[in-house]
Length: 123
Image (tube, rainbow, N blue to C red; front, top):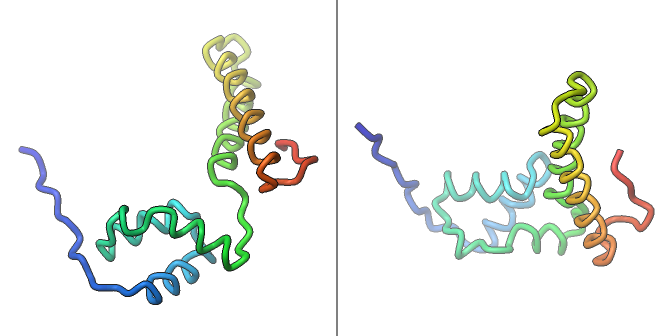
C-alpha cells in the first residue's frame, strides 16, 4: 500500500521573518537546501519563494559560487577517479567528455555574467 504524503502545515511567516531565516541558513546551507527546508518545515510555497533566496543572498553580498557549476565539477572529480581505476570503462569515458563540455559551457556563461573570475578553471 502506498504511503500517504503528509503536507507541511502552512505557517504564516512574514517577508521580514523569511528574509531573516534565509540569511541565517545561508551561513551553513546552499540555496537549494535552504529552499527545500523552508518548503518542508514552513510550508511556504515555491511560487511565493521563486528566486527569493538567490536575489536575497546577492542583495546582501553573500557571494557564493554557482551551485550548478560546483555540482558538475564534483561529478567530474568522481568520474575521473573512476576512469583512473577502470581504464576500459568506455561509457564513463564518454561521460567524462560530456561533463567536460557541460563545465565549459557553464563557465563561459558565468564568466560572461561576471559571476566567476575570467581566469577560473576547474581544479
